[in-house]
Amino acid sequence: MSDDKLRNLIEAANRIVIFTGAGISTESGIPDFRSPGGIWDQFKPVYFQDFMDSAEMRRETWRRKIETDKTIKKAEPNRGHRAVEKLVREGKVAAVITQNIDGLHQASGVPEEKVIELHGNSTYASCLDCGERHEMEEILTPFERDETLPKCKNCGSPYVKTATISFGQQMPEDAMRSAEIETLACDLMIAIGSSLVVYPAAGFPVMAKRNGAKYAILNRDETEHDGYADLVINDEIGYVLGNAVNVN
Ligand code: ZN
Image 1 (cartoon, protein in one colour):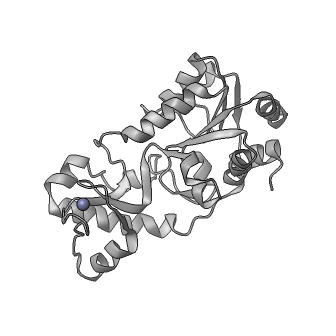
Image 2: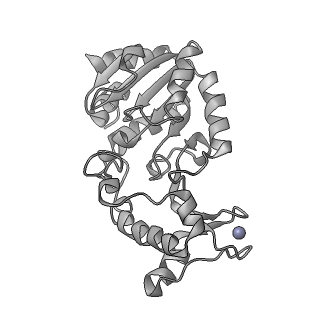
């Protein structure tokens, strides 16, 4: 059984890093935004520079935020998230590096400081000038009333943006640095629910493997890294991981 092989790798490891992509959250009902039929098929993405240059594009991003929130806000952690949380709680997993912006690892109980979000977080907003955090409600309530654009409550900047990384926006330096440190310290990297095609994020599992760690991949479909890994399981994530870790 493939979940036995995964279980053996987990048991033999001392310090695991888990790398997650959209596939772990599709089992919670969140669509993979980049896949066919995903949201980027319906809307052209707003590039970071357009957000900065145009108040109309900023309005457009808030309109879309309201649309995508209808799905994200309803979603709850699933068996895969719970299995990851158990491994973190038991001290097996040192960090969860995620490409997801849905906050479901934190919602499942993984402490904030153990989650490294490479593409940011869609559940709050931050000021691009001073970094001040803004809760979504403070922004969306006036926006839904008459499309009033937010201004930073700390510095007055008009550049308050959902705390996600947009197309064309620089990767978050702190998260990239933490991900590298954790990657180089692990002896097992498990990539879950990622097709491993989006770089620089997908570079972390490669970095771990080159550094001597074991590398396991769990994804419903084949990935770009399959030929490179020590173990590849193409199956449902919650099912396999839940069995491997004894989580219902
Ligand atoms: Zn500010």
